[in-house]
Image (tube, rainbow, N blue to C red):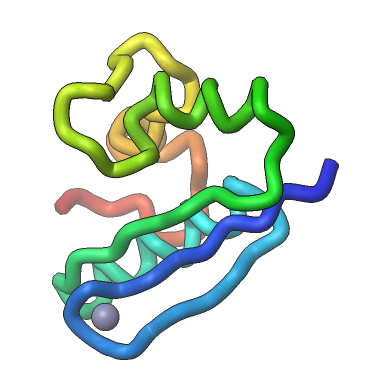
Length: 92
Ligand SMILES: [Zn+2]
């Protein structure tokens, strides 16, 4: 599955493209932890059905379109449970 995910920082020039949501999420998390910057991600090159799933999950960035039940939104959960362990699963 080829998923291009662009991770872009609002507060500095950091910008990188990843081949998976997992890699993008890890990099985003590490940049936010390390710099306290605000990082956004953008999913591109997906089939329409998956893009729609992205909209449902609120990853399109628009307010009010978030779906709290979506597995794509488990970033906070992963952070608090340490399931997505990157070796830095300490407290906030
Ligand atoms: Zn930054």
